[in-house]
Image (cartoon, rainbow, N blue to C red):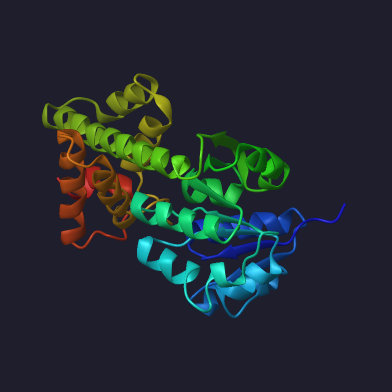
Length: 285
């Protein structure tokens, strides 16, 4: 059976890994990135470089947008050379970037008005998940459409989780990143106490990785010991996500969210934007 054409707009850490795994699984892949040189490794593997997001939308059956933030996302979706201008009701377009609720809802409205099938499909799993094809996809949109895509999405993901109508996947992603950031920061503070009182850091870290345990604790402990190179997720991007989460929360009093956002903002002010998000525990006390 002929495989559908895949489009990837945005070739950062996540987009590169996703495009690479679609290629490994035999899909024709059409790509666009603002900085063309970033695409060279993928073109060597058979990807087709397009001149605009609009061209990607015209050539791909399924298009995934994986840019950095609201500003970059808006720039590739709208305008004469944007995704919307090249898409049609026969296509499926997917927002994978972590975006604000205001923007994702506006984008949903735009695509709905034009009859373009749209899904929000936020990503979790970081660089390692993108490169290994083991991401978890957090989905909102028409459930039958999500189910239809699952065989194709198996090229990039180990799990596809459905949350409801379009926009619900993005809402969950903001909650997830808020809770994970609190956990990472809390782990760092626990280790600060242990270190200050002369405890065996190795034993404490190993034990915390088992109880409370869980993916985030194990990640925090691994990266506490050895800063990841290359990084998995930057301080810059978790700060952006927490800012979107705070806006999503509205006027609710949320001291934990406010505290962890403040901590990451201070890290950005110290020039640590490009550091891995877990290094807040060792570099920004």
